[in-house]
Image (cartoon, rainbow, N blue to C red; front, side):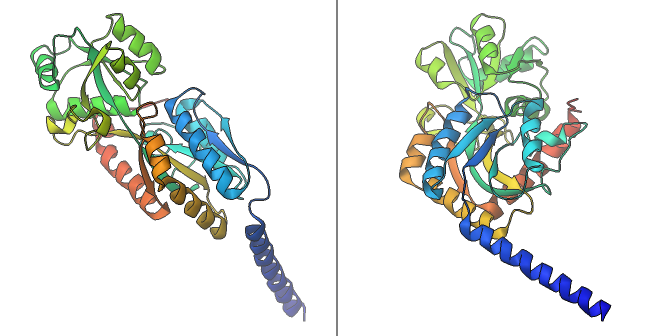
Length: 324
């Protein structure tokens, strides 16, 4: 009898939990959502996220508030979401620096980038640009690479920091073409571009290019994406002159693992629907934001992450890239 009673209690408990889960899913969302942005305010990526958050809030009939949680190369805010309640009310703006290949470079990280999240959708990718001053003697990417080959160790370049997409693109380029260039890490693109204009740098890899190009202060030699960018269609990809060398920053949306399937399905549907509209494509791909929208759902986003991990693992090992 005791065993029977125990089994009945367990069964009732299981049924009750399913009922509550179903009820939560039916009433979701009943309050505002938080979208954790693991970088400081003021980036082009945040502008893209604000556009997206407004549309998602309208679709869900609840506000979506961006919460900046910068620190530790975007891993601090990412870890907060990994440990947040799995109820669909805390979303993560997912970046390559915090999911793939970023964690491959950290000696210690408090979360598993695959197991601790349900990755909902890929919003899009940001290409990196190889930028020089307008008075630089190299007028093309071919001329720049020839200079780097002829004068090993004399060219310095900057990125927004060790482990960023710009840094990795340069590392991949150096490995593939056997180049010797000196990397100078910065804490963001703005100070690096200031030093480039001041003549203290030879080249910068950055996603922030359009305004300086318009002002005629810098020249783009190449873009690191797989395809040319529509609004800079005359600029070659780096891969056109250095096969296999490509790298992009990317943004997705994720939630904590074990978030109820009914909620993740709803979120994925709403997110991909928003990104598939011509209006959002036009706004996000404007040069002021510079995102190439992708609208990949959960399954394809997860495949994308796994490909990124596979692609960058040998590059990071070969370069012995470590971040404390």
